[in-house]
Image (cartoon, rainbow, N blue to C red; front, side, top):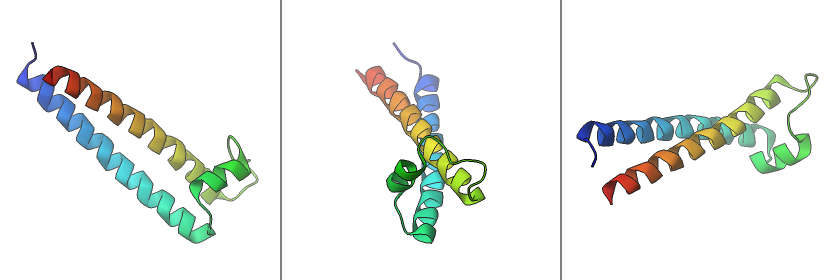
Length: 87
């Protein structure tokens, strides 16, 4: 049994996740265009995190790439719960 409020809340949370993902994706796209490499190549080059001596953009880029992964995971979890609720 589920409540309409629960369904509304899950739907709202999925929307929030999508909004953050779009925001971070736009930032990643700008960084890729600015530096001419993909985010995957950037992360391969700098490993777990750029050092404090690297460009400030690199720290922002790395943090955005981590954040987008977090929001995507969260979105999948909410969508899974939403699908289970519909069964």
